[in-house]
Image (tube, rainbow, N blue to C red; front, side, top):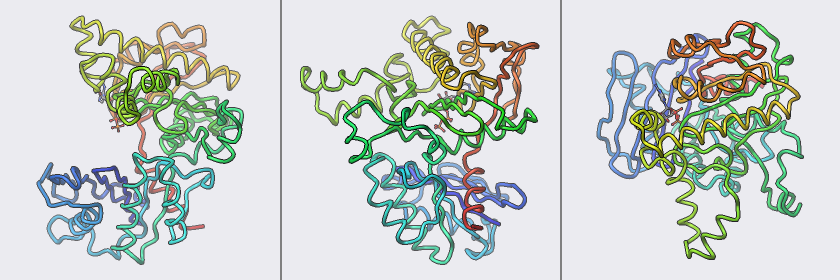
Length: 399
Ligand code: ADP
């Protein structure tokens, strides 16, 4: 079946057309600067272009452009809309209601409209993408695959914040966790790669990209994760601060006269790697600057790798052990420096990596980095959220 996977951002719309029977990507691309001065990047069949200027005033226009390109005689890979069996949408927060993927009928879309405040930075755009697809492809089933669903198995003592209980029971403010589609995919792949039953594994899954999170996966179930009520909690990220003393927020507002919006913006867009290093939100630039001796870049490297170590230790404690340490996403898959910084000094937990394997990894391939005799298997498992969304979409409409 051809599944169109849609990942809508506030000013972008990423898409991938997957033939799930063949397990192959037929076309993919991204509409960017939606609502500003649109550009379109596309790869499909024999056609490939990057940043082509286009008029893309809104998400509905983006979907129309995607469909027109996919079905065009020259650029297309399918004859008509009828060749699309289903559309799978990445949805950031599905609330407590969605412990799995869901068919998006009118009632469900209306419900998603009532919970956009749970993810105000992401959800409005996602909803626009879903509504646009529903309008342009009315007969094609739409499925929501939620970043939060995989974390539905986290126990209450780890998802409830120690605030007055009503903050959870009435306002639904709790840890939801994100990147669930990725953690679910890579931990499943890790078990297959090792030839083990996932039920027997205690995995610490490190998704380290521009947004980063770590999840403890015990027997295939998420039991704790670093992101919380929003994707701001946990590790420091490219531009996000991660966990800080919450009193800093009120101090900046009450004592330093900062506006709440300004603080929110600072924590989301001007903190993390860029905030500490002053160099870049991109890990590669931070590493380059650190090699030149830039003190703040070295500080940012040490801060991030130390935070990752702390969570690995914490999650080994939560699970009563660790068999697999797994790295994925941009930095996790590609940065041998980060993997080395993290794994050095972790021998006490049974984590021993082979530095040659760590440096000579093949991009995009699974790899076991462990040194002989290491009790913990340390792996690189490339993530593939689009594939997972397509797979979930097929499974959901078959039910
Ligand atoms: P997202 O999908 O969340 O935008 P990615 O998963 O692509 O982010 O991760 C982006 C991060 O990965 C950036 O900090 C970038 O520097 C880092 N990264 C990407 N490629 C490499 C590489 N070859 N070596 C080191 N870091 C890399």
